Length: 139
Image (cartoon, one colour):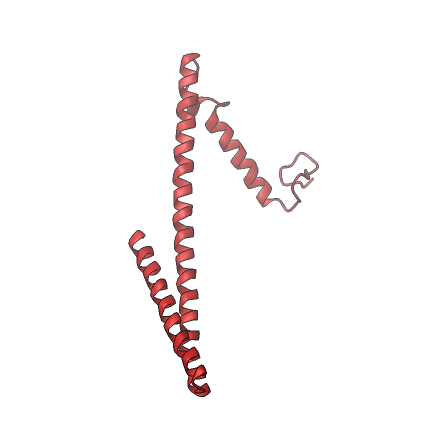
């Protein structure tokens, strides 16, 4: 992916240089009182502008995808480190490992994720609780 990003970066710069060259030609033709030719030279400039926008959009999508992958990897590494810290502290206190404990880090994270999923599936605004004992709010 890094090679593709480099190629797209180079392509974007090449398009920018071509835009500059065509713009210089159009300006020169306009000063030479060749208005029709100057206007016709604006067509390749417009095409270069569109191509530069498309390349920028593709680069943005690839960077966003790469950033998402990196954040997911960092988050999993961070969770692993936290589990190790909690396991070590539990070993020092002669407690069961974190994965086997109902009040450990893993159980807490799972509980928070479950609550977030329930809240996302709920059609109530944040902070508003349903009434009644039934989890889906029906009596």
